[in-house]
Amino acid sequence: LLHRIVDTMVDHYSPEVEKLEEKLDDLERQVLDLRESRTMTRHVLELKRDVASLRHVILPQRDVLGRLARREFLHVSDDVAYRFRDVYDHVVRIADEALLFGDDHDHKWAQALEKLGISPAMLAMDVGRA
Image 1 (cartoon, rainbow, N blue to C red):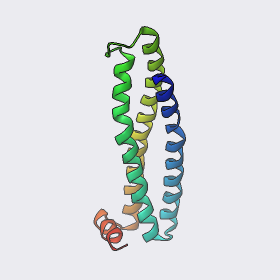
Image 2 (image 1 turned 45 degrees about the vertical axis):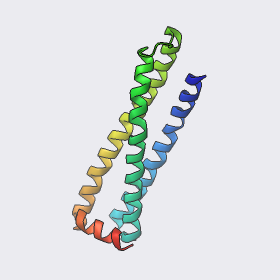
Image 3 (image 1 turned 180 degrees about the vertical axis):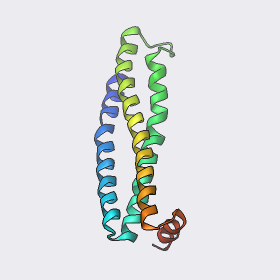
Image 4 (image 1 turned 60 degrees about the vertical axis):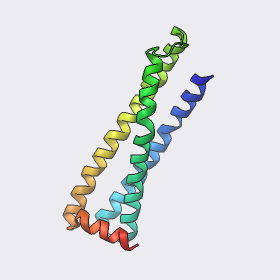
């Protein structure tokens, strides 16, 4: 039962990561088009928080699932550990994707904002006024 619950939970992460990626790509296009900079800045920072939240949730789960897959708990049989290994592999892919996704977009945003002459301090001041 625990395996089914955790497996289903992990399966629902992938679509959420894809949605975040699409939103950030849309915002990146808007930055390059120089449209709606204040609203866009708020949205960028909100999405960056969403990615950070995903990391905050998925990384501890990855660690627990790894322990379940390695049978570090007394009541985990070989059969159940094997099933958790599959879930663990899935959550590792999602965690890696979320980490790379965040790092990649941080780099892209820094480049785009630099081209526009916007500093991180300017962004903080702009969002603070909204």
